[in-house]
Image (cartoon, rainbow, N blue to C red; front, side, top):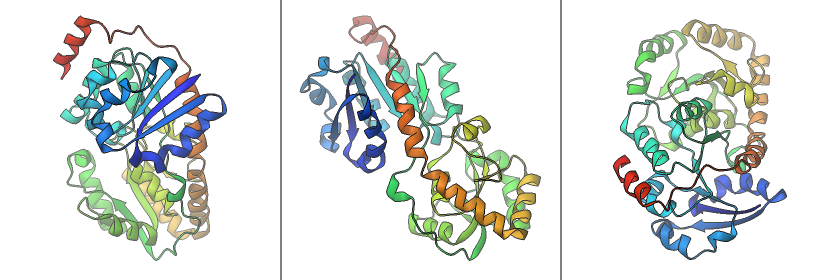
Length: 317
């Protein structure tokens, strides 16, 4: 197939290597769009030989997608990547509702999300949606891991709404395990410094839609990741194995027990951290293979050129 990828120039380092996997079986043409061209998507589409492509893949910031639905409705074989949906916690919030509005306005299109929990949620609403494993750009995985001088850290602010049902537990384990909590007001240098110096990092993905970016950053820093996952099946599908390359937890008691165990068995903790760091390097290949399955299936009936459909989508906004 002949494929067209419309992507932001800022995403090139992150997604470039993954999308190269499509070139082994398809002809891929990529347009890396700067901010100005992203804001003029209709003109970009009109200036390209769209009918020559079997699929048009779009990886742009959500605000660009949402503000230019009319331009996207010109594309009949459309695949939209929404890589931040799983980072949102509440499925009742306005932010998530806007993502659903986008799907409803493009009913024939295929959407791709990271996070199987979010994929199932959209599928129940009748959306053609497939899953792409979360991944990090190759340069984000350091070859050498910094020496670990601190115990356990937690990235997140217990006072945030998404952690409401975990708040009491988080404060209890902070006292019991002397966990260093890095709040939401911390900058990247502080977060990186804490991760680099911590033997273990507790990550609570449960309120969210899948494995988040900051979870992968903890693996990249060489921490033993104590993961309360959003979806255990997703963990299995991407190759995370409890006490081999990650420490999975689903209760305060299990978290405390595993921290105490790993503090006593430092050799095993070191092996888990090393295996988790190595696992991270497999995600690019996993995501690349998934892309092949994402572009193959046929599409639903195209209604973007239907006058009533064009009017109806305005009500979703």
